Length: 103
Image 1 (cartoon, rainbow, N blue to C red):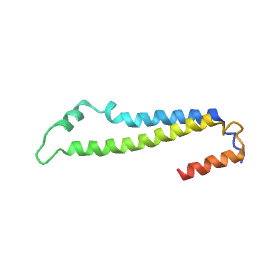
Image 2 (image 1 turned 90 degrees about the horizontal axis):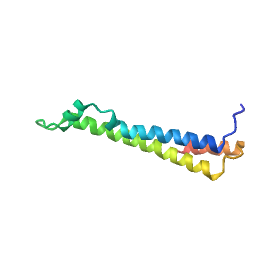
Image 3 (image 1 turned 180 degrees about the vertical axis):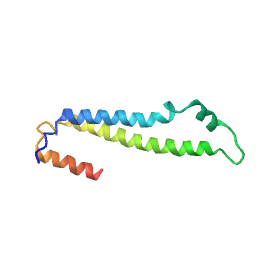
Image 4 (image 1 turned 90 degrees about the vertical axis):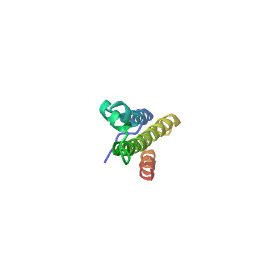
């Protein structure tokens, strides 16, 4: 199968897209939260606040996923500036596949 060459522009654009996705995951716990949920999480209950625990677990997962996307995006942007992907040769494509499997 013949794949198009992987260029530095493609890697940089993919990295930027991954950064945007990561930023969304990091911010969605705060930006998309309804005011009613904020009030419930800040309220006091006997024997603890079950809404707060659910929110804390959700925010932790979102933060980890966002961090992974941001990290991959920054690595992609870094690689786009190294000049490794100028020619788009098969060996570079193979190295990228191996790098993706390792990560």
